[in-house]
Image (cartoon, rainbow, N blue to C red):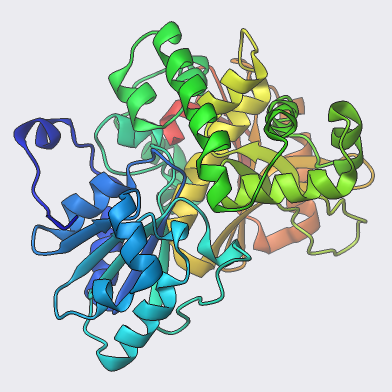
Length: 417
């Protein structure tokens, strides 16, 4: 039941460092409790074992014996001077009350490291948020650069910190190999299919097993779902709508479910990090804005598998960029947020980074030949927000790196991400 961490040589050789790893180590030096959440199979257990070191007592609530103790006598797990890791804590959210009491007795930095395959702050069953006692971090699927062993994400921070006149030099000098975005979209970022598997058939088997395990077991930790086939149909319908506005009425009509059920199921998908909703940028100056959120996925490989599409669509490239931005924004805390921008008149920018009031508009094109007309919505956004907006990025699938207007840089997606 109790495991003192150690890693064998095979694990050491296979380990890919993660962007959030340094942040996790920093938080453990400051906070008495740190909570690392993320979807199943993103590598949370591997990361906490690697980052937190060997001198921790480890309990996983995937172990039924541990679950029994957590349910009947949670103090027996946490009332100790040892540093403790509690894995998959969402299975017994009342355990957080015992952690709270233990922290109130002793606020030793790094005393508790908790992981969960759900956003504990969104779970209705969780009554204790550990406010003031814990910091929260998210581990998303591997970024492209993490898959290459670089422990980082795209160059978003560098672009924001660099004068625009030096952007071309920054991107040209950064080592980044050209890659077919469709291959990345199909394999996604879950470590096993993305790194350890090489063929589409292998990945299809893995994704099918992942969906089955999620729907039939993990989902029940969040909410009792009796109509599992209906839930899976909704997942497939949502997978077809990558990059589209959330329309619960339309979704319900397509899968024969009432809107209230669609609302509940989408929330569960978001709580478990399967689905990602992109909010609208809603600072209104002179235009009436669309404020509904858009649907994206936590992993493009899973979305492609569920939709059954033979080829990824342009929205999947947007999803890749959004995922990378989300990993970067997670590491920057509350100062960085990602949105899309759309007006009632039809002007739209795919992604807007709001970094403490500084705005970076991004347009994504699955074409390899960027044109001036592709930048028209970026120019409209810049006109609307004036000096608050940096130069725009037009990310495309070709090799062109040049200013196509004085304030819009066309850049290959793979030079940035």
